[in-house]
Each structure stands twice: as structure tokens, then as C-alpha cells.
Length: 431
Ligand SMILES: NC(=O)c1ccc[n+]([C@@H]2O[C@H](COP(=O)([O-])OP(=O)(O)OC[C@H]3O[C@@H](n4cnc5c(N)ncnc54)[C@H](O)[C@@H]3O)[C@@H](O)[C@H]2O)c1
Image (cartoon, rainbow, N blue to C red; front, side):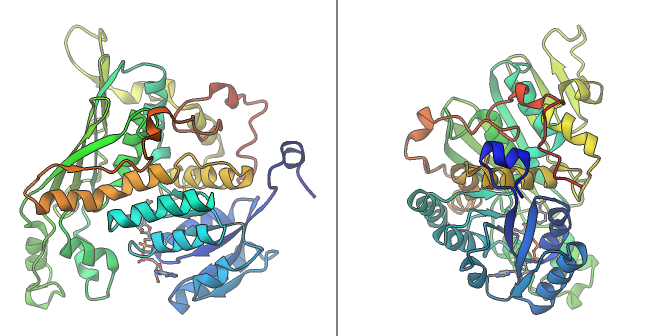
């Protein structure tokens, strides 16, 4: 039986999901997906039998009314008629190929974040989408973080004036990944063998929305510079020395990589990848325009004329006022998930796009743009920080592209009129 909304708006009432990848992230996110009343996980997959079975059991325990099958071969999921879309929280080298195969099979695909390994891989995603008409989306949850959403709201309300500079980082002490090297964790191999901004999307996803990249703006070129690599050597010395699985290995990834991206409309985006030195977590956000600045570190705000003393003020005092209406509605559900709510919001953004058969707010162009910087920064570093061009994946369409579909999840505009508490139904499906 269709819900009133489904019947009146011609949307899918329920969506049936194939779930591919049940490592730490996949298994964690599965809990949240199973709490969504309009979503049924009908098939799960992992290359590892024990992980696949653990995921299947979680589905059966939480949603005994839904029949779920398990497989080690994701192609079996893509062949099924009763799968409407797929989620792909696999490891870095796997998810793009699976997303391409999913689009070929007519299944909208959402994949977890991670670096794109080659520019060709990015083009393959774009061209497959364009040829098949099937969408894919990077699940960049930080686009839906409370502060990132507040920035979008403030930018569209003109609070910062004309933007000039944005910055962000993936700044997360991950030295412990070194201990997983012998266990074959793919991510630790990347962080040893490569040298670049290997995890660019958590900051770049929000930054491209701030600057309207792919819709009236584009990234033109970048330069990247890495420091020496010392953090992991120091960690290995202190955690096992000669007994450590990484002892004696050459480490290529510099401790801190700084990438500067030049945009067509004249702004600079500056990114910092910083995962092998001791530090507290920060995405280091900064948004700066002709009327003021917000800085995540210290959570400081300064707007022109705010005071005479040139002292920034605490953003804590302003956040409720500037909260994005999506966040204001969402916080009433009191869902915190693994990342304070943004995991749920990014999944809902994807599921709503599938239900309505519309482009997701992070479309294929945005998805590849934010991910390809990993291999472009590697190229720049390999050439002594030479500038490298960023491909225009829109083939010039960025100059005048249509706006994103008008939904509460849109990232290119804030549709205040969609957030009337009397009529807002988008979270009814959340337990
Ligand atoms: N958005 C976030 O906040 C966030 C947080 C953590 C991790 N991640 C991302 O999530 C992804 C997964 O991370 P993880 O820590 O769970 O990694 P993981 O290596 O623990 O798990 C990946 C799983 O994918 C499976 N897999 C790989 N190739 C497959 C294939 N072809 N078919 C089926 N299964 C396959 C592996 O067997 C493994 O179980 C990564 O891209 C990571 O960067 C995102």
C-alpha cells in the first residue's frame, strides 16, 4: 500500500537496497540504514564470508520481516531486478569500479569516500553516468555536518559577502593505521606508498559547495607540497621498533601536504592533509569573504563592524541563529549516529534522490571533483609542486548549469520554504 505522499507525488514508497562492503564503516552505517522505515536491505555482500554473514545477521535481527540474501560476488546483486540502488562502503581501490558496474546495471550507486586513483577512473565514472543516465553519489557526510550546513546557509544569506578564500583539512592522528599494515589494511598501504592529499573529500566536499564549483565556478589548477615524512618513523620506533610490521619500510607520504586550488572565479581553496603527527581532530574549516570570516579552530566568527577591537567572537553564540533549516528540523529527531547526525543526512539525501528519480545533491561531477584531487596532488608533488590542471569534468557545462533539484537536501541553495514544520515530512521515515 502506497503512503499518501507516494501516491500523490509519484515517488517510490520503499526502496530496496543492495549493500556492498561490510568492513568497519559498512557495518556501522548499516545500523542506521536499518532504522529507516522506507528502506529495505535485501542483499548484502562482502569479499570476506564472515563479514558478509555478520551483516546479514544484523539485517535479520533488526528487520526480520525483510528477506535478505548474502553473497561474496557483488555482480549477483547488480543482476537482481528487486534491487533499486546500491550502497558501496568498500575500500578505496574497490568502490569506483563497483559504482561503474552498478550504473551499467541501471542501479543508482552511492559510494563511500576515498581517493580516486587516476584521472581516467574519474572520467570513467562521468562517462558511464552520461551514457546510462544512472546517477552516482559520493557519500560525503561532512557536506551535512552542522557547521558545514550553517556555512552554506550563511553564504546564501550573504553573511560573508563575496567569498574570496576557503580552507579545510583532513587533520586526524591516524598513526595507528601503521599497526594494521601487516594485516593488509588497504588504507595503510596507500599511506605508506603514495605521497599526496590522500583523503581530500571531507573538506573539499563542503568547500566545493561553498564556492559553487560545477555550477558557475570550477577548479582550474592546483599545486601541492608535502613535508618530509617523520611521524610514522617516530611512531614505529616507539611502538615495537624492529618488531613493528612497518620497520625498515620506506614511507613516501609526507606528514603534512598542503594543496592550493585556484578557482575560475578567483577564489583560492587551501587544503591540509595531516594524519601522521600527534594532534586533535579538526577539519580546519575557514570561510572568508568581503564581509567576514569563520574559522573552525577555536570556532571563531568575525563580521565587518561587529566590534571596534578587531576581536573575533565565539561562533557558539551564533550557531543556533545561523543553523541551516535542515539541521534545525533534523535535531528534533535526536539522532546522533557515528558522526553527530551527518551520516544519516547524507544517506537520506541519496535515498530521496532514488525515491524521486532525480539527481542527488552530490552528483557525479561533484563526486569526482572532490575525489580526483588525491591523484592530482600526487602528480604535483612528484613534479616538485608544479601546477597541474584540474580537468573540467562537466565539459564546459559548469558555466551555465541548471540548479540542483529543489529538495531540502540541496547544497547549492537553501530552500527555506520547504521547511515548514506543519508540512515537513522528510524525517517521518526515521525511527
Ligand atoms: N565518511 C566517513 O566518515 C567514513 C568513515 C570511515 C570510513 N570511511 C570510508 O569507508 C570506506 C570503508 O572503510 P572501512 O574502514 O570500512 O574499510 P575496510 O577495509 O575495513 O572495509 C572495506 C570492506 O569492503 C570489502 N570489499 C572490498 N572490495 C570488495 C568487493 N569487490 N566486493 C565486496 N566487498 C568488498 C572488504 O572485504 C572489506 O570488508 C573507505 O572508503 C573509507 O575511507 C568513511
